[in-house]
Image 1 (tube, rainbow, N blue to C red):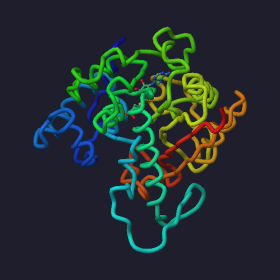
Image 2: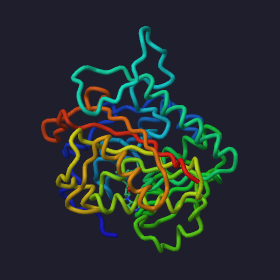
Image 3: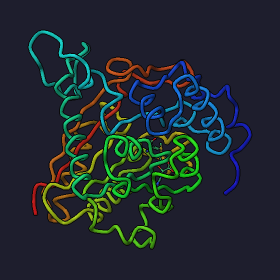
Image 4: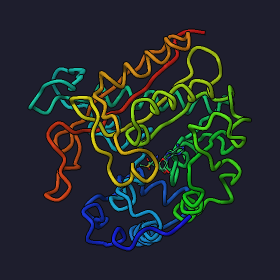
Amino acid sequence: MASAPQDLLLKSAPFYISLSENPPTPAFYELLEKHSHIPRDEADEHLEKVRDQAWQRFPYPNIGLFLFHSLGLSGDHLPFHSRTPKPPGPLINHWPSFSNSQIPYSYLSTRRIGRAYERILQTLKDGGRFLDVGCKLAPDCRKLVHDGAPPQSVYGTDLFSEFFDLGYALFRDEAILPRHHFIQANFLDRFHPGLGFLEGQLDVVHFADVLHLFGIDDQTSLVQRAFEMLKPRKGVMVTGHLAGNMRSGFRAASDDAKATAQDKIWEHSSRSIKALFEETGTRVGQIWRAECWFWRFGVHTKVEGKEDWPRGAEHGLITFIATRLSD
Ligand SMILES: C[S@@+](CC[C@H](N)C(=O)[O-])C[C@H]1O[C@@H](n2cnc3c(N)ncnc32)[C@H](O)[C@@H]1O
């Protein structure tokens, strides 16, 4: 594939930031130190080097903003992570999607996400299989393996195989994660031969920052494809997170979405993403329940709007955990 256009490679682009503007969490540093054997005092330089290597080919927000060091599956990037001591006072389980100028108390929500992560980990230790769709550098696969999942249990797929090389460059774990578990494929292509052997074999399909690249029809196809890839039974899961909007609807696509998807994307609220999973389930004769949480940028997360790359008060990050309830 051709290199990125020169004007996109400018380091003055609004989404090319320094690591200190979006530093990794302690859990990510631990992953680099214990899984990848990169000492803490070399970690920042290493991350910046791999980011710049990736930027030459993929000058998109996920790379420029260091979003690839997010360990979203475990909820590590969320406020009130389960490792946070429980604050005093009553616990309120919030669903802040539709109101709320105050900072709601999110300890219970994050704890639920952390517990789902523990459940996934146990499933993999018991012989289950996990696929990260649009995995890019596949940090969540590495985190699962570091936390005890067998390396044979995790798979990643992406449109671009260069990301797999960048993932190995970042995590230095070619001796741990089998290369043939990273499969170059278009997940929308139901007949792609590379993924056929996993059809009906998976326990968890994960979409981290992927669904927001697509319009609603393709999102529906991606979810339906995920359902087909899972074992045909109760308890299987689709997990992930995406950029959301408190008011769902069509918006113009960002540059990175244009690179892989289409001009108009469908931005979800937590209510509409819940409907996407549950209604797609109904259409294919399965019962699905999705739990979704909306984390407002700059309110629940440290990501805030910038003058030249605005994030409105209506924007946020949605985390979802969808579970099949019917056999
Ligand atoms: C914004 S990135 C998110 C990457 C990663 N999951 C993360 O959280 O760091 C979206 C990824 O989805 C991949 N992608 C886009 N469309 C895809 C498709 N149809 N099939 C497989 N991967 C796709 C892109 O190549 C890109 O790596």
